[in-house]
Length: 229
Image (cartoon, rainbow, N blue to C red; front, side):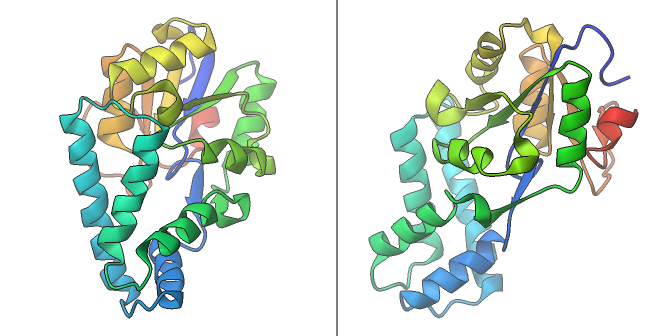
């Protein structure tokens, strides 16, 4: 069982696991970009976004996964610049996009999120978010009713480390007041979430709707399986 003793706390990755941008990031970038003179199509923006995001991940990897609020802001400024290189006012475009994703209404919760969190809270588990994000996540989480059972937030910009760094998971466990072996992390990123948590001594489950082949990996297709397994 995924939630067998000694697990006492369950932390969830935020973006891609519990919450999703709605509309999607490429659609939002295209709409905002058009207001600043961009002519890029959504498909091209999606391609550029993946490339820009991967480039910033490599920068953070080279820096040992250290981060800060300033670094997270700069990472998104650089992503916007790479994706929407044809806008007339790059800084204004960045500010509008950065503000957009700070709003709860820019996000939707996974359909299973509310019921699963309520069930886990009813069973007495401590619940938290574990996210490579910045202070905007606090306002987003506070504005989504489905996330009300969540009482702990481990945010990379605040703890100074990005997943999969051991320092991130050490800060998470310190905030929970529990040893790593009593914490389970559920997330959709195999490297950052699953492997990072396991390497730090936490239990982990990969949320993998596509159901790819990963022998020996604890995996669920839907969040609801976490409470039914």
